[in-house]
Amino acid sequence: MKITGARQARFLQSPPPDVIGVLLFGPDRGRVKSRAQALATVMVPDADPTFGATLITADDLTGDPAKLSDEMSAMSLLGGGRLVRLRLDHERQAAAISKLIKSFDTEPDRAEAKLIIEAGDMTTRSAIRKAVEASKHFAAIGCYAANANDLRDQIKDSLKAHSIDITPEALENWLPLLEGDHALATGEIEKMALYKGYGKSEGEVVTLTDIQAVAAGGQSASIDSIVTDALTGDVDAMDANFRRAVAGKVSPIGILFGLQRQLMRLTEASILMDAGQPKGQAMRALRPPVFAMQERVFSRQLDIWGLRMLRRSLFECQQAERAAKTAGAPVDSIVSRLLLALSGYAAKRR
Image (cartoon, rainbow, N blue to C red; front, side):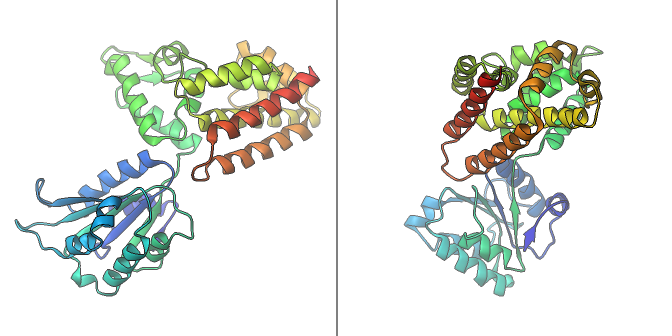
């Protein structure tokens, strides 16, 4: 069966007892891992901490194709439930795994253990994914990067748990640095909470200065700077900042999302201007409104980019995102080419 949307959260909290195994897959391996860890305690709460869980890798099956079936059929030596975790870095044993899934789905009583499969991104053509989605006793859950709203809530809720607040400016500048990697986001939020003393002092607030001082990527080259340079036509500065950011482990996908967000805000303001609102009023109508220190740059970008080109640029961003999320894609090059194209256009319009 295939679990999507809001059903995922409910399933992960309380999977049906007749579910034998769960396939967790997707490009966000951090989310796959964290969900697998949480699901393991729910699916087999009574597993013996030492002998109740077995970890198998894709390479283990290459040397012993029957290992997974044997482990799924083996009874617990000390009582309690058993869990088998299969971590797939490739699908060279896809045919054998698919056959096993179909076999246990047909005869679920043969399964003495529960199974959690952790995998990377899988296309709809994946034999393993097909087998799981077509079954009755196995479930497939795609793990994709949290959207901006989900990540915003995660940051605010996690900090709030330590009685720490965050300014709107700090939040909007931090989001692009965390997008695309669940494990990175969780670790960075925890690091920020530690930096702020876990809220032991009353009234602790994360500010933009804290982001620049502590956040991964915040010190080397901010995403805002790269986006600003691209959309105002400073080709050389954009290219240098982009290279420095990537070298500093800033996610190119995060940079792409930051670019998309700015283009969407410019598009919204441009639509209001086309409807007859003055530029300043259109900028103040945005939510959140343009910060005072950014008004001059934002106004300049509105002068450079007309509504037609903004819409075309958003389309190109979507195409780049789709290409970048393809397995094995040269993400750095894809994002870099888009930024160079946009900054080159802006340079001619200055």
